[in-house]
Image (tube, rainbow, N blue to C red; front, side, top):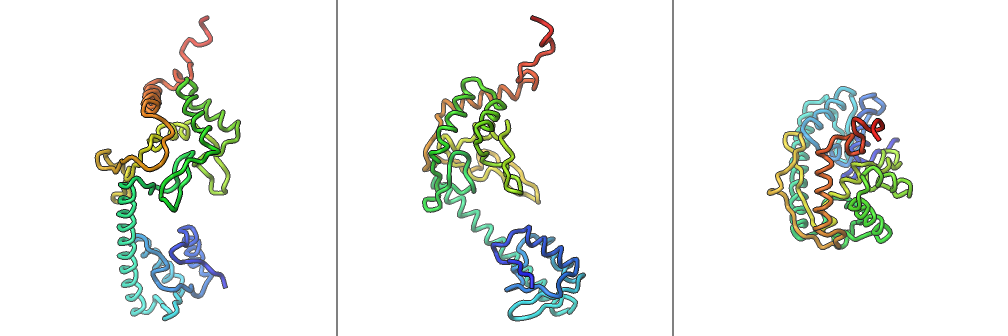
Length: 260
């Protein structure tokens, strides 16, 4: 018997793989603790789950009952349970969002993995500086403020075999440093001590930026790693570089190499 963990901790990838196997009629039945363990997503997700089990003639086996969706009573029961699961899912999401917002207002970190060189402390719900990376971050800031461009900083980090904080491939390998990675690191306000929550929101299936005045932004409880003056100088240079022609940023001009 093939076992698939379909509890609250199971990943969407495993559930999609299971549905593909059900669609290919590899199983006569799938065992779950309850119907709502199959999914808690959008209505379209429940419709996909139902159609997959129905079309493949695969039954759903729970400790209390075996559901055959070809039977009218079981079909109706499945629909009711999917509605309750959806309601529970939305309630959990709302409570989690409220909890994160309340934590952010207290200066606690609630946004997942913090940026380099911080680590998340689950006990205090704050971020602590990784002492092995503190000097690296300060070197990045100082190099940029002293005129080194983003690309050269990325090369310097790669040459020194410094792992990137983000952009990990599905196979677990590091993608390497890029201009964008360095830029995001330099522009982050968390290094000035701020906690910002609610930068984006989902609306009708689309992710959109939230106006700054609607975001939660407070001084956090973590250690600062750059000053206000350094941040302003960094942002001024980043803004200036955005307004320059890409060739100008690399000191390449129309007559480069022709005039001496």
